[in-house]
Length: 99
Image 1 (cartoon, rainbow, N blue to C red):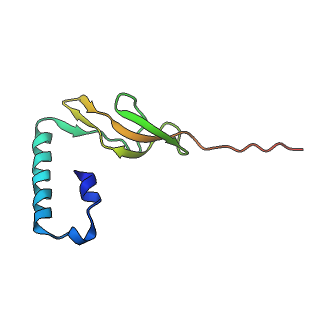
Image 2 (cartoon, rainbow, N blue to C red):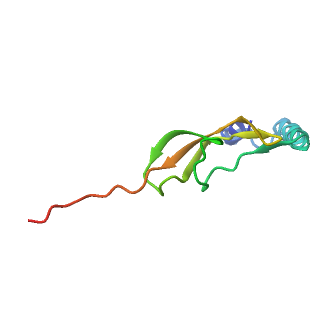
């Protein structure tokens, strides 16, 4: 739902029905959180295969999540969907031979 709101065309912002859908979404999210649902924090965290699913590796700090592609969730400390993430693989080092 958040991805849908993020990709909403500019000409649709401000309509009351869009605001209504956002209110319903926020109420549903609050209800689920009250029942024990929690988002898995990913960006900037060390990669944890129990919480994250690596879909790509890019240059960046070794073993640290660079970007979150899709949010992950836990329900009462049990992972119900891991976060899909991009993980840092370290900086590429170019070696030059001295002659």
